[in-house]
Image 1 (cartoon, rainbow, N blue to C red):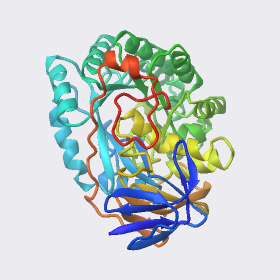
Image 2 (image 1 turned 30 degrees about the vertical axis):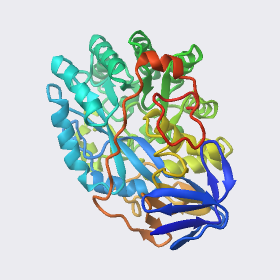
Image 3 (image 1 turned 120 degrees about the vertical axis):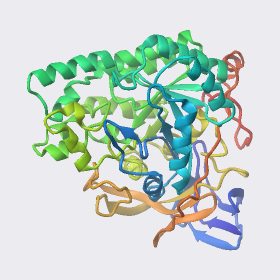
Length: 484
């Protein structure tokens, strides 16, 4: 069956134009004036954009003695409600566990997904087995990215020599290393000191992870990646110190990508000083919220292109789970929600305020992630042959964010009471209308795994890195390009 989205304004990362868009089955077939089909969706007054891609989620993730509350059913349902049509989750082996065994676990979890998904695989330990399994992950499992934790000492943190070895392996395989950049050794000492001083509340979480530990680790990871001849993706960049390290590296030609989070763009560290312990603990995540001067830096990075992506780091723990840390802030499970509100909050505080253009909004919520992860223009674009993942965005539609009406399974929302203007009118996932003006029409298990091809070899990448992707070019072109 064909669907035509009529009377809208198409907005991509680099173009804005009036056109109808015709979908045939799960693909975009064509765009142009006066198209017709078996079904029509009226996009009058709306923008027709690629569906959002959230490159950073944690669904049903085991962490700090419990599991995140949202599984792949509720988490992807929440994503679709907010205009996100693909997520990239993290398969995280326990130290000593096979990467392939961990992937099997996440494959089983993801069978409930309502939208398309892919994985990053975490490297939480290092030996010959991990070295060999990384090739299977890339060549046979369709995953071209590996995450490395520089924090959580004694749990999943890697040492520098292990990280360098993994980065070198990524370079050989055409894979992209990701880092959680915080100096875990210093964080552990600060945590111990604060606890010894009787400072046990959620506010000490922020004190134990100052911007300096993130800035130092970001700079160190960049240097290690340079020595390993591999690009680098820095997740959840939250402060000027980390942003400055990324910005400086990119100015000298290093291949570094920076991800910001919607929470860090909107919420600040004052949230941790609320007298209500539950309120403050619900907002504990790593890195923590920063003061407003850091928010200015992050917004400037999105505007200037030194930061390329806005994710959610959706790792939602309930209030009851957060209370595991009563009397000891180091035991508060780290994570908040955000996948459902990422796009509406960014539109309200970015586009509506003039901080972001329409095209920049599409770039940082969809197209750049697709390019960096090597799935563009299958995802993140409106071109013939692309997957029919589309959001019809109504800039006049409003709501007040509330836990009472959200799709996420947790019992609160860190954006509770925020009024937003600009929301999806329709969301289509592989050509199926899953959100319309009457509500959600998701289908559990309908989401498909999206395989991602390895990047070109480093020797080829060095010569092709700065070439831009040609408009409307359907085949993938190797490493992420300079337009990102």
